[in-house]
Image (tube, rainbow, N blue to C red):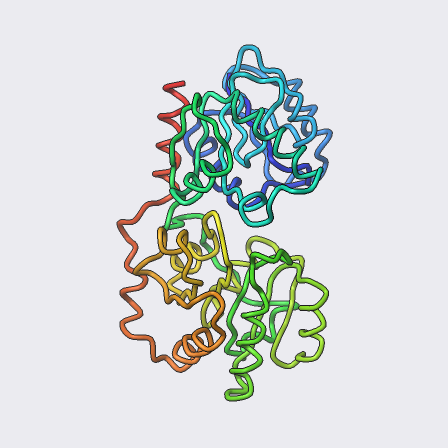
Length: 344
């Protein structure tokens, strides 16, 4: 039996893991029980457990997942969690930014690192979503007795991005604006200030250009937004469908990160034939070289220049940036996972 350990204790699965599981399990018919966006998490979990049978799927939240003992099955954790008790598990590692960028000097970090190191050392296989993530992992963790493979994330999102809904409700006013989109959180490595500064500067030159930030921001960044309400807009709770709609109606998607493990929204934007303006970091080059515009992550000037060119329709040969018909898709990801599961 295969057991899938959910990497979150919230009510739904995040978009990256959700799409991986959708392709690997639901579309391939490998497992019978799966659940997305569950409102009553505990009851659904109990229902899955009570109906468990061969080729079935069990969702286990992250804290309970630490203590899963799976004697007759292999446990897959798609979000770099894992079980302390299992010796038969696969873990997918997205990134090690928590250690490589933020360090592991505090007591809490040292405990967390020790737990991860223990789990990873007992895996049957560790899967990485990018070559960059694998390289960084091997700098942080000295684990040599476990199989490691890279199953790269896709560039082409396929059926996961259609249909696109029109901008309605809280987003309706954006229909008449030329806006750049940033999908982020308040963590330092996201480098959000560069985006805010660029939008403020370009808005002074072209008042029709605005910036939309989806996700949480630091208190300082929120104060900047509060003083620029005509050019900067923040939405913190946005559905997956609305994210795609915001991408579709934007002038372009920006990512200013100093480090990443991948960048799912860039793949979504490129699949929607939108211009991507990305920080020039190794993982962005690994996936999106030739499909995006790049700027030095600490250069507001370069970002403003690329935004201006995009807003004014001056990007050279934009169709070339979206020529992804034969690129890697979620079907390719699913097929590689299927081969891995069958082999193990």
